[in-house]
Length: 60
Image 1: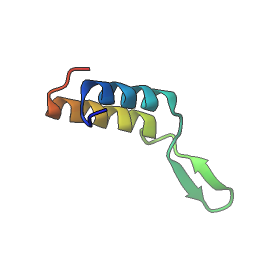
Image 2 (image 1 turned 120 degrees about the vertical axis):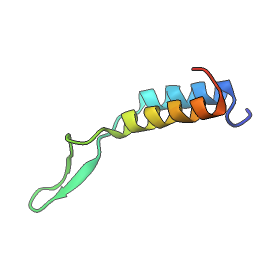
Image 3 (image 1 turned 180 degrees about the vertical axis):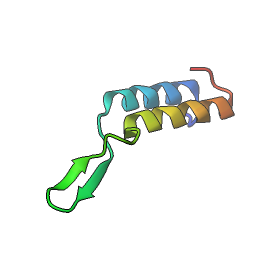
């Protein structure tokens, strides 16, 4: 599959939508906890994928 083709973008979008994960922060007493104040990784990656698709001229 050619990089930055429409199929590549669709596969990445499908992959990102299936993932879960929140940014973690280190607390003083309890180790790592989810940081719910920030945008989660899933949303960040989907947003950047749409920007890249727009730059390359691919409609999703």
